[in-house]
Image 1 (cartoon, rainbow, N blue to C red):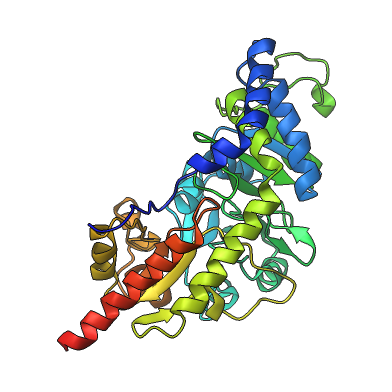
Image 2 (tube, rainbow, N blue to C red):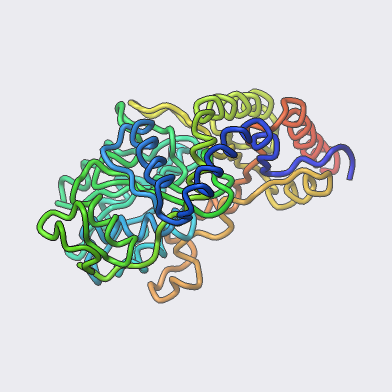
Length: 390
């Protein structure tokens, strides 16, 4: 290994810069003495409503639970089908199962944006289909215009897996607000990350918001529950314990003030990678190659490149102290937990091709320009060596 280690993700410098604000919020939690689902969580919800423009934000304990509770609140019934992309993190599909539904996979678009393809989704609709759930991946939203039209034509509910999408907007509205609602993840590596698991549902639908608030707290009704108002601690529906803890809310509040600057810094670094790597033989596609989608702008969570000899390149970088991640090692339809659905290799070729070629490079606000340049130097060196050998 040569040179300084470059991790795939770190937020050490971010915490140094933001510690005073984080500490103030943490001290509020300690002074208040309520560490779960308390005043700091409510403060975070209000701040996120202002930042995203959502009518409601309901904080929960993870992005996965945000998806599960959103699906239930949006009306998913046992056995209902939900169309999801075959290329995404596993929680996209397992959340459907955990909410009582059946995931129905469809391929991703050809344009390079990695979103659910509207035509492919349309072809997968059956009489049992209840919802369509696009995922906003990496640096741009899915084709919500096209997918909303599919949902409208078939009478489906549109829900959004917007776990990676804080800051992304479509036609002026924050990602997650086109249909019944969206889910955010605050996993530490996310654009707005906590120091553990945390998530939220954002929605403009009053009924969805109220149901999520019940479901996250064992199904209890209470202060704002319409017909159940005034029935303190009444369990109205079977729920779960999915409350956000106030320590995570405190950290997120301390970091929220720098979110716009962090998004801008990620965009700078991604553009730097694009400029250096676009013409490197062996690098087949970079984020900047995908055509812009009308009504949207790029907000870069992950800088994903598609490359030749992906696994060998990842090993070359690792040997030189450079961290990378594979997004995603296996498409969802070929995961063992979904073997009962009967899919085979070749069913969704674009998703399978992405899984075989995609590699995520280090990208976070703490990353110095010279570290990004060294990543590019090593990628160029790897492919130059391949050419000499051949």
